[in-house]
Image 1 (cartoon, rainbow, N blue to C red):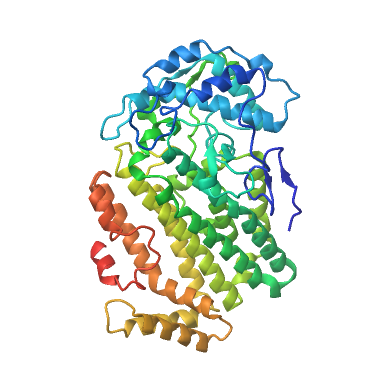
Image 2 (cartoon, one colour):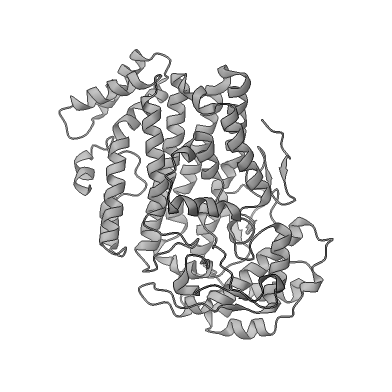
Length: 526
C-alpha cells in the first residue's frame, strides 16, 4: 500500500517497523544551555522524588511543597532565543516535552494541592509566565502542535526510556523521563500505553497487506485480515495489564496535572494567558489535555474496519474529530490517507463477499469493542470511583464519551453478522440459542453451535465460526449492559464505586457473559 518512510517527520515514522512510536526514544535531557536550568528543574519536580510505593517518608520534590513551583519558575531564565532553526525535530520535541511539563506543573499545582478528599480539583493558575510561555509556543509551532502537554510528544509516547536496552517495551522495562507524582503508579499507567503501541508495527503491516489484497489479490485478503486481528488481540492483551501496572486509587496522585483547558471550565475558567506570546494578543487559550483518546491504534482500526461510518452525528463525535488535530503531522497524514485508501479499494464490500473475511472482520471489530469496553471500565474504576470531576483530561464528558463509540462498534458487528455471507450462520446460532433450556449457554451447547455453523458454511474455520457464534449471542446483550451502566452511573451522580463494581459483575474486562453462563446476572443488571 505504501512504503515505509512516507509518513516521517523526524520523530515519528508510521511504518511496519516502528508503528506509531517514535523511531527511537528521545534524549532524557534537553540540550545545552537548557539542561542546566530546565533539565535540573524537571529532575526536582515530582511530588515524590524516590517513587516509593509506600508513600511514607520519601523526600518531596517541588510539586510536593505548596507554591514552591512559583519560586522555581521565577528563577528560571527565558531561553527562547536559544532555540535555533538548526535544531533537529528530535531536539525540538525534547524541548517541547520539557516546557510542556513545566507549564502543566506551574498552572495545575494549585488544582492538585487544593483538591478535596472526594477528588474535586481546585482552581488552576491562569497566566503562564513568559519564560515558559514563549519557548513552549516556539517549539510547539515548529512541531505543528498546540502549546500544551500532549500524549505523543510530552506525557506518553516520547516520554519513555528503557531500563535494559537489550529488552523490549514491556512496561516493567520502561521508565518515565519526566514525571509529576513520581510514583510507580504514574510510571505504570503511562508505560502501559507505550507497551500497547509495541503492537502498532504488526497492525500497520496487516492493514497494508489487506488493502493491497482488496485492490489486487482477493485471495490474500483473509490472511491479511487475520494479521490485523492478531495485532488487535495483542493490543487488548497488553491493555489489560493496566490493572496490575497502576492502582486505581492512586490515579488522583497525578491526574490533576494532566488536565487540559478546553472542557474543564471549573478548573481554568475561560482559558490560559500565554504571557509575552504576541500571536495570542493576551487572549485566553483553550488547548485540550493529553488523553489516551489521542492514541492512534484504535482510530486506525476504526477507519480500517469501517466503525467510523457508524459514528453518530452528535457533539461527542465532534469531540472525537477535534482530538485528531492534536496528533503529530505525519500521523494525521497517515490517517487521512488511510481513510481514502479504504474507501477507494471498497474494502467493506470485499470483506462482505467471503464468509471467512466477514467473520474475521467481526473479530477485529469485537476487539475494538473490548478495548473500548475495557477503557470504559478504567474510567469507572480509576476516575468515577475516585473523583467528582465530571470531565476527562481531554475535556470530554466521562459518562457518555466512550459509550458513543461502543455503540458504533456493536452496530457494525450486527450489520456484518447480517451480511449475505454470514446471515445463515447467524440465524443458526440464534435458533439454537432460543431452543436452549438453560439460563446460559453450556460449553457443550456452544461447541454444537460452532459445529453447526461450520457444517452450514464450510468456508469458515473453527476459530471464525466461534467468532460468529460468540458475537451473534453477545451483541444485543452487550448493548443492554452498556446502557444499564450509563443509566445507573448518571443516576448515582458518578460516585458510587460499589455500583460500578456490581455493574461489572465483580469482574474486570469480561469478554463473554454467555460463555460464563451469567446471562441471568447481566439481565438483572440491565
